[in-house]
Amino acid sequence: MSSAPHALIAGAGIGGLSAALCLAQAGFSVSVFEQADALEEVGAGLQISPNASAILRQLGALERLRPSSLAPRAVKIRRARDGALIAVLPLADAESRWGAPYLLAHRADLQRALLETALTHDAITICAGAAVAGFASGRDGVAIAYKRGAIRLEATGDCLIGADGLRSFVRQRLVGSDGPQSKFSGRTAWRALVDANRLPAEMRRPESALWLGSKAHLVHYPLRGGAVVNVVAIVDEDFRGPSGDFWSSQGDAAYLEARFARWHESAKGLLAAASEWRKWPLYDSAPLARWTGGRVALLGDAAHPMLPFLAQGAAQAIEDAAALGRALAGGHEIEQGLAAYQTARRARATRVQQESRRQGTIYHLSGAAGFARDLALRALGAERLRDRYDWLYDARPRGEASAL
Image (cartoon, rainbow, N blue to C red):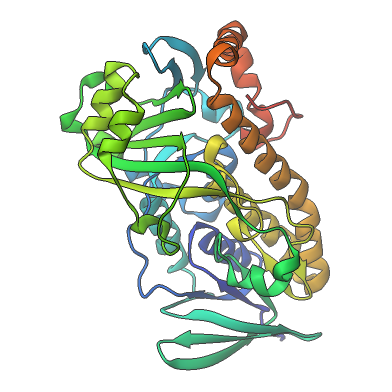
């Protein structure tokens, strides 16, 4: 009996762990190489839309996530200057409408649910503290070099999946400097977790809130059973900061206070309740012409970094993983399977990239353009607004429409 094909994955983030689970279901043995010594609790909130939660359910990770997640009743869109309600996107019936739940969760909780699920699979090995440092793809397999401290080691497999994020080493080696490079978008994201006990009841409701202002917007929603509120402020600004870990940059609360000085008191009170801010620059990239080469493929941010204005970064990585598993299931020839994966995913991921960029422009309109946007949202009404997300959220596709 022939042995199972062996997949090597660079990166144990959400995309890498999802890919490991999908490939294990497809009959692969999987080795995941993560440069961090341990999967730390970094990041903040995620909106896990039904197109992703349906896949998490199939992988067995959704039930592990549910106790720490929250299903919002709606997204409420408000005007920055006076808090006026502009529009409501209903979400209470998300599962019956789109085939899976819409959830809010901490990034670390999702990563933990995926890791715990992966650790139940005998076919999956997680190699922490192992940074992929080189690879070569041949006709019969792929070989990688990886570092554990000062020690350089090697591993071989049937394919290599680069799920190593925005600054992907695998993408750099696969595509080179000729491919599109990630560029600063002119916006920064500020994140904080606020103790819910410090906030009024209106800020603790089981819903997601989106405030639209001039050259800035604000998102907040409860996490972890309502114990904390996740806050994200995104502003148009220049950025001069550390070139390393985006999370290492501490934000100056005085800047936000001045930047949001003309916003409604409720929004300003929320910002003032945060004890610490972390900020990082948002990067964008033109679509890659190819995600694969030989027995190597890219996944998630390594393949299609996208702005967060549709909250789809993690969801699209999870979709990639599912498509990869389907393309390589059943003992298909590896290179053909990876090419089929690219074909299945590239157009949709590119569209989400483009729509996310467009959404950011809409969110940050000011003056007459912002006034017209608000009128258009009000005129749509809840049902037509929700219709615009069917193309994105539906786990059972029913045709496509434009995003907001």
